Length: 333
Image (cartoon, rainbow, N blue to C red; front, side, top):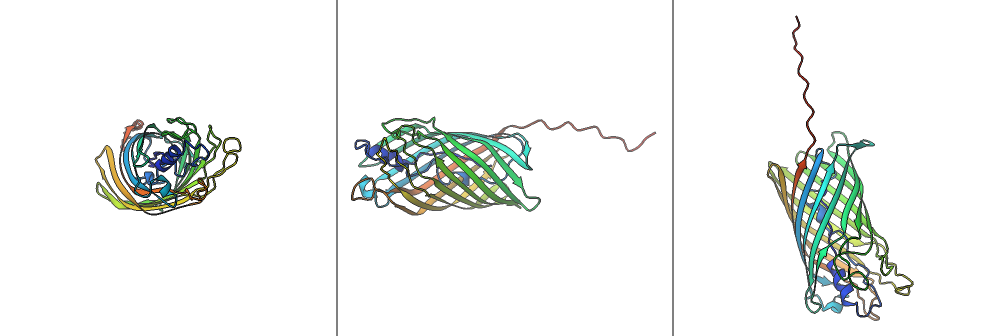
């Protein structure tokens, strides 16, 4: 099942807070609503048996600010840290639609983030709630292939503060996230490619609209007995321009494109009623461009570092098994 969580991009948090005194430009959320790599902990296009499932996930992100705009934030020595806890529910009622299995997901993340010297910023609070009202999973015969599609929504109910709404953990806008997942699930293999894109509405305070963010996440694990191991990787990048409001910013645009590539590994163990997955990723390639926040200086920046995730999932409820009919005797008098 897809275990989905959210994380405020701490680079965006740092930048928006650092430039609040100028209030001339919005950093334009140069990151993502969903932390890259979050679906790699056992996610696939398949669905578990009918029931109500819960998952608890924690992870840490240790990084530094990089890119041509890094000197504006104290250089590449400026450290970024985040710790996240999220709890979610996956509901698989056993319904089918157009030959697909239906499920729904809701997740609530909590974030602590800090930026090192010279910014020295700390934030903590509730991030935007993530809701998937509908996912559909198709099993392609006995081939082992599955296809899943759905729509996720980040609701702007997180912690909001500051003149632009970006000085805390939440984001003052909606994010719509369609997804397309392809998996091969057979003989213990989980070969999954997960593609999804974030589409943001305008900031409800400033009217600034952040560009679209494309995610691609890849899993290649093998289960032997109760153990699961294998490599994982992801890509995340902004693929469209920001749009500034005419009233708040006079139409000024802080265009900020970036690309992030990472790889790592996963180890999992099934305890019977619960499954534990632990995985880690290292961002080995990053780039950022297009920043125009400061005249004569490129403000484009992004974070680069490593993440360590842990997730525990288990079933809370299962439908009653149908009562077996008494067998008829094979002999009659």
